[in-house]
Structures are given as C-alpha cells and as structure tokens.
Image 1: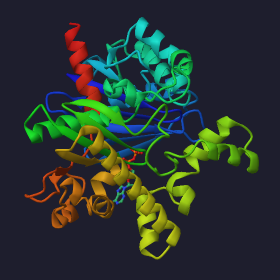
Image 2 (image 1 turned 180 degrees about the vertical axis):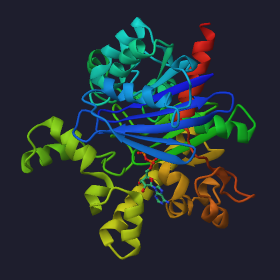
Image 3 (image 1 turned 90 degrees about the horizontal axis):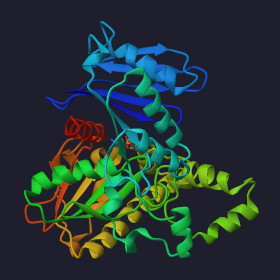
Length: 398
Ligand code: ADP
C-alpha cells in the first residue's frame, strides 16, 4: 500500500508518500508561502532536492502541485496517481468527538467543522485539504488528530478549575497536542520494555514542546492544554504563567486585543525568544556558551520546567520505569538532555554521560545499566503514525 500523508498548516503543506511494505518514505516535501507572494514547492527524493516556484493562492493549487510532482517522470514515485491507495491527514484538533483516528466521510467533516473554533489557525486548512483531496484524487482518506491519543486522560487531569458551564458550553478543557509523536515513541518504548504494564514519561522537545505521563499505553496527563500554549517554556511560547499577569500586560503594553495577546505576545514573542531574543535551541545554546547571560537564563528556564514536569508526572504515576526524549531538541541536544536528567537520583535516574554524548538523532539508551529508570532517545516519526492509522482504518472498511 502507498499512502500520501498530508500535514497542512495555515500557509504551508508538508507531504510524504510512504510505502507501507517497508514503512519508508519514497519522497517528501513541503509547499511554502501558500496564499502569499513567492510560494514554492520544495521536493526531496533519494537525497536530491527540487525546488519550483508555483503560484499557490489557496491550498488547492498546493495540492495540485503535489499530485503533479508525485507522477513526474524524474521526481515522482508513481506512474499513475491510481497507485496511491489512501491519504492520511494530520488534523490539529479532534475535540471530544475523536478518541481515535477516523475515516473521512461527511459526518467526520461535519464534526471537524464543528471543532473549527478550537483550532482557528490550523483547522480551516486541515478541513480544506480533506475536501479538496476528495475531488482531486477520489481515494479513501483518514484524519489523524493531534489530540486523540490524549483522550484517555482522567477528568481530574483534563478539567480546568473554572465554572462547570464553561466546560460544558464552551468545550474549555485540556486536550493536549503532539499526540502522534507521543503515540509513536510510546509504541517504540513498549517494544523496548517488552511489557504491556509500565509507567512512562515521554518528552517531545521541539519548537513546540510537551510531556506526557503514560500508564500501560494510556495517557494520564500531558503538559499542553486547551491550546499548545500551556506547559513547558518553548521556543516562542510562554507555557504556564499566572493568568493575572495578562491584565498587567494588557493595561501597560500597546496590545490591541486579547487575540493579539494570545496569538502574538504569548505564542510568538514569549518563551526563550522573549527571554533572550532567540527561540531556536541551537542559537540559544551557542549564545549561552559565548557568555550571553539572557541566553543562559532561557536555557536554564527551559530545562527547569521540563525537570519540574518530570517530577510531577513521576508523582502522578507513582513512579516511572522509562523516560523517552524525542523532538529536535530531545533527539539532538546532548547538553539539554544532560541538564534535565542530571541530579535525578531521587527518582532512580542515572544518566550514562558517555552514551548521552553519542546519542544524536538515533535510537539509543542513555541511562546506566544500574539506573532504576531506563532513559531512551527515540527519534519520532509522526508521518509514520499517520500512515499506519490510515492503512489500518482503510483496510478495516474493505
Ligand atoms: P518542530 O517542533 O517545529 O517540529 P523540531 O522537532 O524539528 O521542531 O525541533 C526544532 C528544535 O530542535 C529547534 O529549537 C532546534 O534548535 C532544535 N535542535 C535541532 N538540532 C539541534 C541540536 N543539534 N542541538 C540543539 N538543538 C537542536
């Protein structure tokens, strides 16, 4: 089976074709600057790269460009588009309606439209792509939600302590995100542990960052909330803060409304960027090493917040068997991992410093043989989760 995986953002669209016999990507790429001047397609196949500037006033032109390149003689991976068996879409938000991935039919699209207000920046593009693809390709489609893996959280973990009617009427609760990534590394860790009963903490540390507390394959808590803003200090997002801070900011800074406060100030200008002017961990680390004290602080705050959440989740789970590090930072930043995991003997974590120094973008154990808690670096693969779910759901309906 060949599956086309689509991950649409408001102005970008990432894609991959995955051959399920080998679970390898045959090609991958991204359409950038959709709806803007200078839009282009950046396609990769077999280690080679092809860039084409194409007008993409909407996601429809972007999807057409993707389908065209997929059957291109040199850059394509199929002779005929009929060889693509199904399409898997990453969809940001499933609300409380989707506890698992779902076949895309009229009812699924209706529910996605109902949940559009929960993800106003991403959901319109996600829905549009499912609708357009139905017409352009006419193949079965599956929606894979960033939130659904976290739907097993108990009510005391997902509810906010605000008036009940605001949960009932406004769907205000914690949903969690990065679900496909937490799900992928959970399955990998389960294979490594070789058991079905376990206590696991997964740390997805990328530009966006979140932790999940997992018991026997089920999420018990996760650090992102109603939106991906809650929890850790991230590249450009504040993570947890006292909501009363917002009143002071609104009264004293030239911010026109609450929407700007949330979508610009807290999402794009805060986090490590707000503290030291840099949101990219590589740049933060380089500046800190060069003696920039604000960058040192940004790094320390990032690390400290992750440490606190690991402690909280170990308490929530009544212990922990395994900790997994993933995402761009978790997979590659030896220094961040070291700083998070050192001084955790109280929990039974003993870092193998030499192994940690070597672990760079590959699956590797980084705790010592006598560590009570196993710590692993496991590179994530969200596209593969989407493709696997798509294959399973399409096969079930045959
Ligand atoms: P996204 O959340 O957008 O998918 P990624 O998971 O790719 O992002 O993570 C991006 C982050 O990973 C950036 O902060 C980047 O600096 C960081 N990163 C990638 N490689 C390294 C590295 N070698 N050392 C430190 N940080 C790294």
